[in-house]
Image (cartoon, rainbow, N blue to C red; front, side, top):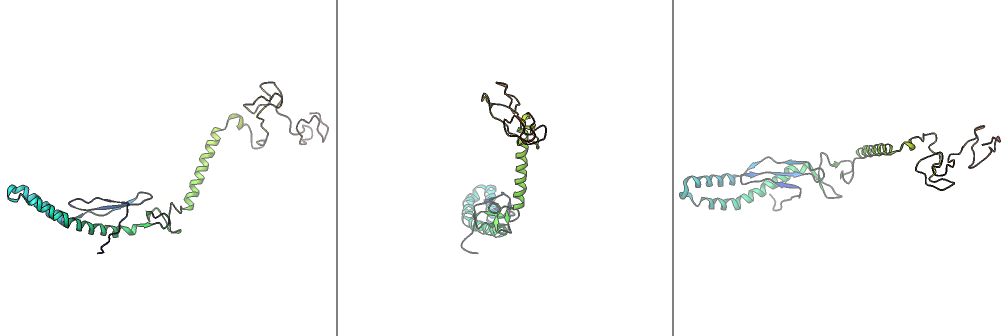
Length: 214
């Protein structure tokens, strides 16, 4: 057994006077493993001495002091040994990321292909699926927020120019109206000749293709 005991921050010491137990957790997902409870020999001895002292009163009145002395030195040594065993037992289930130095569980948070934790190198398939789901939610909200006036713009005429103000009186327009609610000016003009279908320029009075009066 070496003089140095390797340890990490992501562990909990559940040891008591009766024995030793430790649990180690993943820095990323919190998943953990716990060692089996290992009874302490010194804990058993000190309990026996304390019990005898309470049974026989003054005869073993100094037994508790003896128990403390046994516990303070021998128990600490046993605790160190148990902790080192726990580290060696559970270490294979965790791995340290060379980029962020986090200790993560191999089962769920390690990207074996990249040699990094999944915070530093996420699974592309998972990220793509999440991105698609996020985009779908955005589209649902965008559609839900669409006004009734906007819904009237079908795929065939969605490029139709929607004016923000009246070209005659310059009053602001709240909707995609055909006539100005302020002065009554016509806002919608024919974009194609009703006679030949030729595309017209703005404010044309006659069709330049067939002469149709507009």
